Amino acid sequence: MDLIQVYTDKCSLCGLCIDVCPSYDTADIIPSLCDYIQSGGKNEEGRPLEYDIRLCYTCNVCTAACPEDLGIRKLISASREKKTGIHGATEEQGLVDPFSKNNLYKKIGEWEEPVEFKNEGIKSKVVYFPGCAASCMNKVVGRSTVKALEAAGVDYSVMSGIDYCCGSVSAGAGNTEPLEKLGQRNIDEINARGSEILITTCPGCYRAFKLIYPQKFENLNFEVLQTSEYFARLLEEGKLDLKRDMGGYFGADGKLKIFYQDPCHLTRAVGIYKEPRRVLAAVSGAELVNPTPENSVCCGFGGGVRTSFPEKSVNQAAEVHKHAKSLGSDIIITNCGGCMKNIIEGGYTTKKECSSNDSGYSNESEETDCCALPVYDLAEFISLACGGEPTERDDLKLIYLSNKALQECLTHYDYAPFDELAADYDPDLK
Image (cartoon, rainbow, N blue to C red; front, top):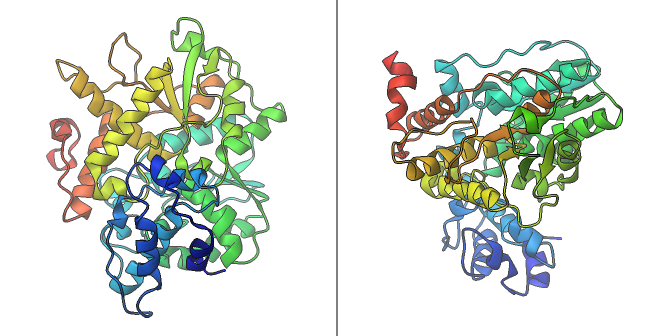
C-alpha cells in the first residue's frame, strides 16, 4: 500500500508521537509532510516544506509510541529522498558518501592512517565488517571487536573499512546512490570468501545487510549478526570467557553499575536490546541499572542532526550522562560508534561546564558531583572482561579531529567549542 494512503487510513493525529519526539511539537507536521510527498511531479517539488526535516534524529521513538506503528520518521525519510531527488545531494549527504570529495572519513584519513586490520581479505567462516567509522574515526570500536573475537578463538577475516562501505548512512539522509552502487559488490565479496556469518557493530551497516540488501540484491548466502548477537552466541557456546571481575578492575564500591545506552537505530529500528544486556549481565562484578530499554535516551547523533545542528545534538548527548547518573551508574556502555562519539562529546562539554578549572574530560573514574561518566564501547568492555589489555584510545583527539574534519568538509559548520585542544591535536600545527 502507498505510504500516504497508509497514513490517510490509519493516522488519527492523536499526537502520541509528538509527546515523545525530541524535535517537533505539533502533529500538524504529519499532514504537511504527506502533502509535500504527494504533490508535484517526478522532478517538481510541489508544495513547499513547512517544517525543517533536518531536525529529525530518525530515532524511531515516535514509531514505538504510535499504536499503528507509524510515527513521523517514515514521512521524514520519504521527504528527504524526494528533496534529494529534486535538488541533488547536500554537503551533509556527501559526508559519508565514499564517492564524495567532502567525505568525512577520507578527510580524517588524510591526517591519521586508518586502521589496517589483521586478516583483511582472507577466506573465513566469519567475516567482520567494521565500516567507515570504526576504521577511520572511532577506531576503538574496530580494534576492540577484533580483540574480543581473538579472545574467543574465532576464525575470522575483516573487510577493510577503507575499501568497503555499506551506503546506508547516506541513504538514511536521503542519498541512496552509494547503497545502490555498493550493495551487490559487498555481497559478492563476502560470498567469495566462503563466509557463513557476517558481523558488524554499526547499526547502519547492520540494517543495510539485514534488512535493505535482501530487498534490493541477491545471493545473501550468509547470516547477518550484530556484534552483540554474536557475543551472546559465543557466550552460549562457552567460548566467551568473562573471567575478569570488572567491579574490582574499575575500583567500584561493590559492583560496577552499568548504564547500557540503547542505540536508537539498533533498538527501535531493528529490535536488538536483549542480546547486549544478556552479555553484560554475565560479566563478573557488574550490574545493569537499566535491564530493559524502557525510557532509553537518544544520544542526538543520528539523522544528520549532529552536522546540521551540532549544539542541539551535543546537548542531547549530555542528557544521556544526566539520565545515567540519576540511575546511579558508574559507567556508560553503548553499541554504536556514533553514539559513543557523541556521548563522549556530551560528557566533555558537561564536564567543562561543571569544572572550575576546565580540566577536560577523562575516561578515568573520579570522585565528582559532575554527571559526566566514562563511556565505553560494548566490544571494548567485553575484551577487558575477557582479561585483555585496554584498547588504545584518545577521546580528546577523537573530538577535535572529527570536528575539524566537519569544519573542512562543510562550508556552514562553525561549531568550535573545542579549539582549546588545537595545540595538542591540530595536524596543521604539527
